[in-house]
Image (cartoon, rainbow, N blue to C red; front, side, top):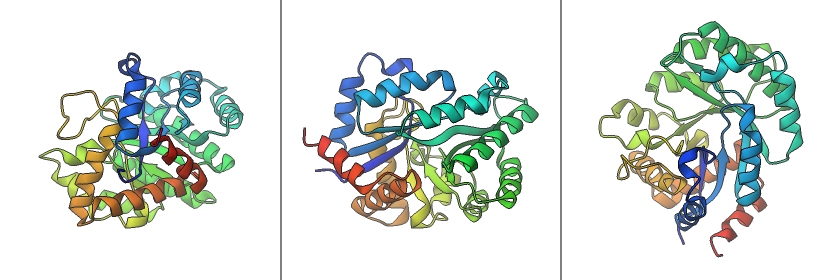
Length: 273
């Protein structure tokens, strides 16, 4: 049996999966993926994601507002997120949230929405899933200020693409770092160097599917089964066996998202069916 893996960031509700979800699930189970964390781009997705979790018991999920959708924030956003998070025990995080200065220039609006969600995460004692693109320096400033205001906010820098120096900033604030298929790309030397900076206990892996398919699946739709290629690359870069890498990243995801060991064992049994 493959080593148990957790894909810590997926988007299975996207249109590209609607025709073959059962086959996709069979492939991720065959690849050893025992749990998946489904991210949320906007609260309107919540019912779709819930339905997916009903269908696939190994799926836990988040609720939040993506920075590229910050213009959709309404005055009642926090009340809506609070209510949704409380409505389903399978909600294990808030997000994805953060800053994206690559595709949008509404920096002030993004920061306002981000800080509000961070405050809610502290209130609810939930980890956050953070999207950060072309915004590492400002992200660090904001998180540094937030962490100084009260109890630490827990979370993960997802689909990480920063330099080793930037990686160390967020590690210093207590965050996990999650690597995606980009770590397998030929010219991703910066990301590959960052892999070496992350201590064992802060390391996660993900696909961010359907985006960023890893080598050797580049050019195809990404899917959770492909997290095995991310695991293989990260293990090689760190001088670990695949089994050791799978064990530590599975443990880390269970720690961050408060997945009980019984839950992981239960999900593992899905592989037998």
